Image (cartoon, rainbow over all chains, first blue to last red; front, top):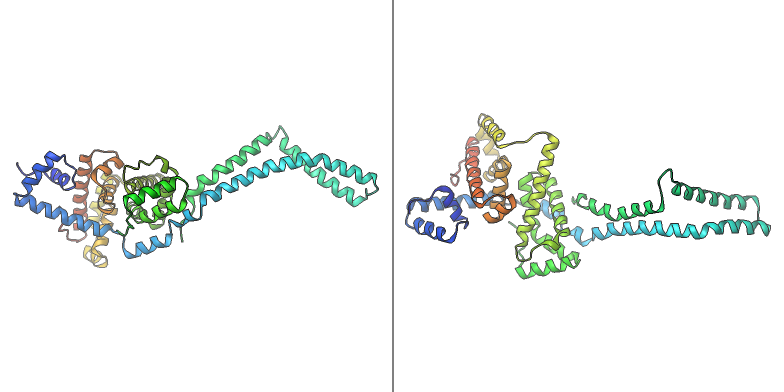
Length: 174
Length: 198
């Protein structure tokens, strides 16, 4: 066999040749001083490049300061998820509480007036709470704004997903 | 390379636990492979802070896609593939933002310009030989830099590099030959002797 070309020799050294071709190159290299020298040179080059590219002490210190593994111990994904669930629970719970409590405000106001507790401050306070709450509900439900409970629910669901998408962007600096 | 080596059994066990939601198991995998992942990314992007962010993103992506990992294949190569892709995507988007791409031809021009740089001996005297080689690697055109880093830092087989870079094994060999030739020329212009380089 004639001396293999540079690419073939390189592929042989890398173990990337088919076995029959590799065997032929190997038997040639063992009998050819020039190819044996080329093999030695390639090994030296590989060693030199590996040494040059290896992380130095400063880079290793920087890496250990990053603590790349530690965010997984603090369960960041689970934390992000819980905020979404809290938001969703807040929307659902708030709507349910308001639906139950809103008629009660009117009753309380009427009862207070009947038993003589309809003093000005109490009347004003209850009226203010009731009025603000009703106005907020009307605003949320206003068709012109397109806002609705389903939309809020979608917003809450988006909060379930959105922080997870942002997670890769979080800082890793120590 | 300072890597905490895990046996195949340990790796498979940790992968299975991670898939089941055990984050401490995944943390152990991160710890075992962080040096390889961070180092590969660092040698590709040449910026520590960017490398840290990309490494973190790569591990996060790996965690998200762990269910799709083929356990019959090495986890290290899979992680490095994700990391290298993340690094290259980051580099490309940064280039788009900068509106400047150093193609092979442009790199040639830059190399010619470097050859006229004053006092190469002074430059070499300021740096370690290894640092000079690292700098030369960082100046390689992207395909060559990727091949060199994956081969000589990450120690990946040609077949793995071929799969990652979506080219044939022969092309990987050709890319590495050209990279070594370019490294030799670059280092010579800077007064660094290259006994091992062709």
